[in-house]
Amino acid sequence: MPFKDILFAQEGPVATITLNRPDNYNALAPNISSEMLAALEMCRNEREIRAVVLTGSGKAFCSGGDIKYFEQFAGSNPDEPVRRLLEPLHRVVMDIRQMPKPVLAAINGAVGGAGMSLALSCDLRIASRQAKFKQAYTSLGLAPDVGWSLWVGLLAGFGKASEMVFLDPVYDAEQAQGMGLVHRVVEQEELMTASGLMAEQLARGATQSFAIAKAGLNHAFLTLLERQLEVERQGVLNASLTGDYQEGLEAFLAKRKPSFKGC
Ligand SMILES: CC(C)(COP(=O)(O)OP(=O)(O)OC[C@H]1O[C@@H](n2cnc3c(N)ncnc32)[C@H](O)[C@@H]1OP(=O)(O)O)[C@@H](O)C(=O)NCCC(=O)NCCSC(=O)/C=C1/CC=CC=CO1
Image 1 (cartoon, rainbow, N blue to C red):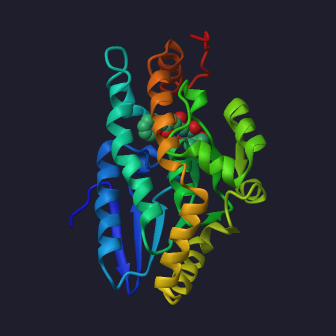
Image 2: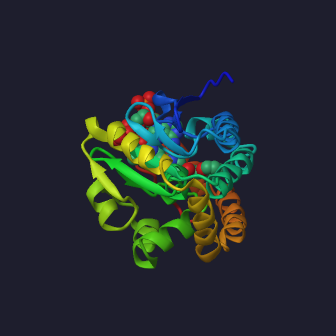
């Protein structure tokens, strides 16, 4: 299947999906999510595939929602791009969680907003030492979505989730590992080798056993996911109607600090 915004490769039992919009730091617009859905379906249906790697091309893993796409709707329909993006992205996250095979995020660089949600929805994460992590939503005048509040709350805890929401620091890979957001940190040049080796180990594992165990983990920890996605959907739509979001958008595009008014 020809893809425009992702690359798809299969080597034996390991499939690799690469987000491939490097000029926009692999930002998420509707087409890239649709292509991820198609690639995930192939991974699910192809019996030979027993492990999936998700990574990004260039300097970023994924910078979240595509701010240049949001800009096209600024003013008249500010919530429209959020609506258009959320529907396929929610399905991507559900498909990753319901994939009866392990999904490994190979985090090659910057991660922001919904890009973090995407990485955290995977089963395992290896990060390059050059990776950096930013919540990003609230600095844009939006609110976390795509399961972000659930993932970060579960993995890093309520305190760190609050720090990220209110202060929006940029964490490096070691800090992210210390918080439980990534499992391993390796040198940039070793990332794809280390990820490939881990994926091969996963692909040699008891795939049916992994599928049953993953369903059990989902049931124990993620029964709230669908409800959380709905709460976040409503939240980010409400936030997208504020003046502060307009300001956040303009400030990002003008490469300046936003001046929020609180409304
Ligand atoms: C922290 C960063 C991710 C990385 O910082 P840095 O390494 O300093 O890189 P920059 O110089 O800032 O950026 C490099 C170029 O990439 C462009 N870019 C970066 N992020 C985006 C983006 N999200 N959309 C479009 N383009 C992006 C940036 O303009 C630079 O291009 P030029 O060289 O041409 O100028 C940092 O980049 C950062 O903080 N990015 C923004 C993160 C962000 O705000 N993401 C959106 C959060 S909201 C979100 O994810 C929301 C939704 C909402 C609704 C539905 C669905 C999904 O998400």
